[in-house]
Length: 123
Image 1: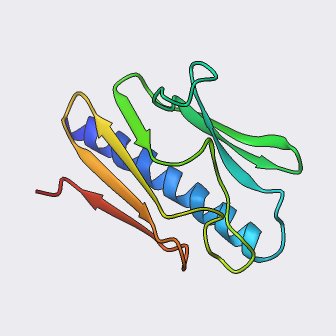
Image 2: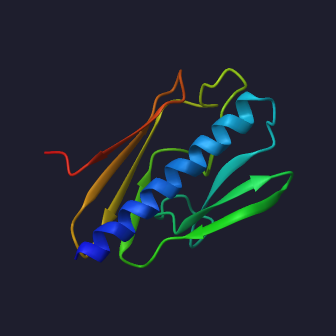
């Protein structure tokens, strides 16, 4: 279980790092950089299977979650910031759960500042 916990922590932190990467690129004027979620079908009702980091109209990075990691999000199918640092839409909360360990993560992106916070196993 310890390896499972470390693996999930790594996945969550890599996801947050990619959000911050997109934030930095957008705030410095590169508005063609964004994070796009991967779904099993064109329907957004599904859980994301992973995500792409798009830059210059192509996928720079592709991440697929292992089968025991489930993500749910509130947003559209992409994540992008304005040059002011604010999300290009309302605030975002993403939930990631490890089905093997029942660890739950809540990742919150503040709408105005673009700050990203991770909360683990809140009661």
